[in-house]
Amino acid sequence: MKSENDIWNYAITMNDMINCASRCSPRIRAYFSKKFFAVCGSALVLSSVLWSLPAAADLKLCNTTASRVGVAIGYKDDNGWATEGWWNIASHTCETLLKGDLNARFYYIHAIDYDRGGEWSGNSLMCTKNKSFTIRGVDRCVERGFKQTKFFEIDTTEQSDWTVRLSDPNDAKSK
Image 1 (cartoon, rainbow, N blue to C red):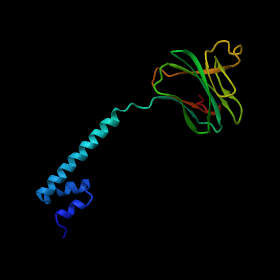
Image 2: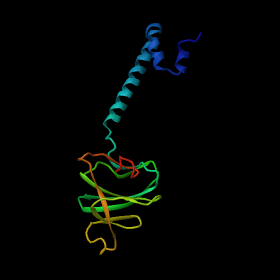
Image 3: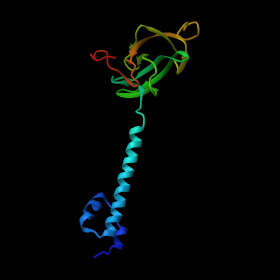
Image 4: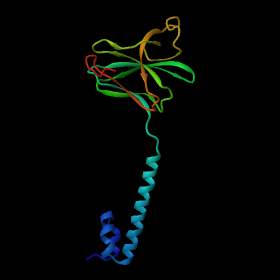
């Protein structure tokens, strides 16, 4: 039979604490009480810290097609219009295009199907390049040495987080 001193050498579980309430010596019950409140207090502090962390708010794009796609984005911020590209997104994967809360209601996307050809485009003209780019302004693209490209509009309805899904053209859920 183990003595009371030997019990300090063993790991204490919540079950041990609960079972000890009626059958342990006062000294051990006092020890378990302290441990129980320490564990509960730690859990409460940890949960309140985790609860107070901000949720991830981003603009994400999910490629639900069977192809690899290249994606460019257009948006207006405090410094005016900007376009950025290219994100190369593998089939059936998602990428974050903009990190953090979305500050605008409208964003613009242009995507190219690398494997089968074709594109997702719209009526909004913005500037792009064939290689990786960040371009300020959407006027006089060709005069400034860029391509003029058609983007489709995304209305985020002023949400702080939004996901765009690209799907195959014959899929009814396209865009």
